[in-house]
Image (cartoon, rainbow, N blue to C red; front, side, top):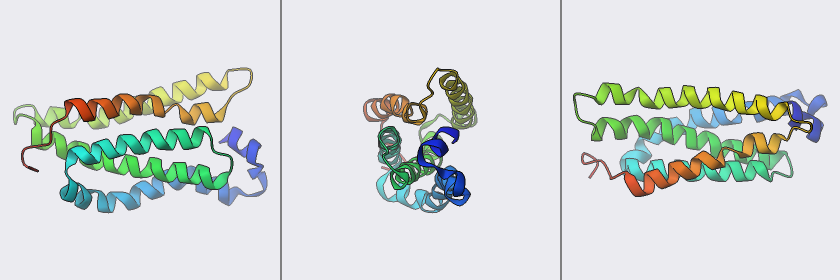
Length: 164
């Protein structure tokens, strides 16, 4: 936030700064309400694919965001992707995993989120040590793992039998 604040002169507008920070969480909280219903309508696999596309597009929008509304749009896309993933992944795992390891596999989304947050903090810290830190790179790099996520979801995940 420090670098975004400098570029867009948000020192005089702490409310807008808070909105940028919290937009993903607000959107994710709201979208979670509907994510289960949408997942029931379209299936778990399409929701996982959609969330990967939202992560990818949010990273690209953030990478090239010329103004605050585009940053907010990126945070909205990111929050929606988070909501879809955190709702659909446990459902998908529960429906497709063998009963004897279902509980173990359902801990993977939480482990992945925690590990991802740790790696993100390490990465942002590494970026901040550069001579001229770039907030766009810090936030736009989310597009890279989302490409892997997309291809795994498209080519390796079948639709879950209970949904079919």
